[in-house]
Image (tube, rainbow, N blue to C red; front, side):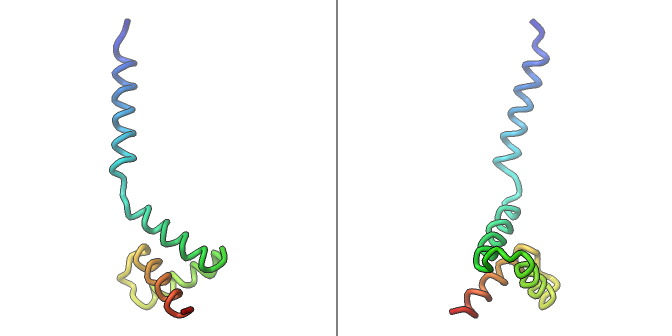
Length: 80
């Protein structure tokens, strides 16, 4: 029996496992902050984008992740 296909499958499995274990966590954070902001805005995506863009306009050096976090914090602070 030829071992090449088995070796290929094992290497592919290992690669996929490492990819999911060590992928960039910032993608998850921006998604989490975006989802929280979206819930706070009653699923109004346009409003979420306006809030994020406002934070980015206030500070162009922010990452999108930090802008989403700041927008969420501002929204919570302003509504309490």
